[in-house]
Image (tube, rainbow, N blue to C red; front, side, top):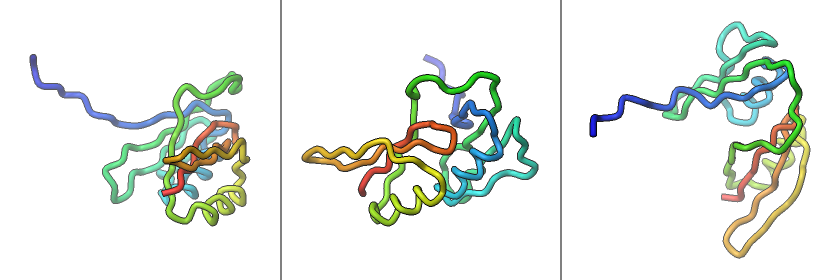
Length: 119
């Protein structure tokens, strides 16, 4: 089998206002928005990490169902981070706990679900 030449370039979200959603996620993740964001397209830079870019592209249709893919964010300051996310405009959708994990599902400023995991 030949060696793969693929690598992950970005995780991309469809949205109504790319710049607004990018600013929300920049605040959540402590990243910078690339120069010249517009309502049509914006990108979060990976910073000093090996993480991929996160891109946001405007699409004409609204979100109508649960995400097929979502981001998981882990925090060792779970309660404080929950309050910070709410102050940034996230909405809490539900709290969950098993014998091995605790997390809260949120919606971002356009309703995209993501999880905050207690770490």
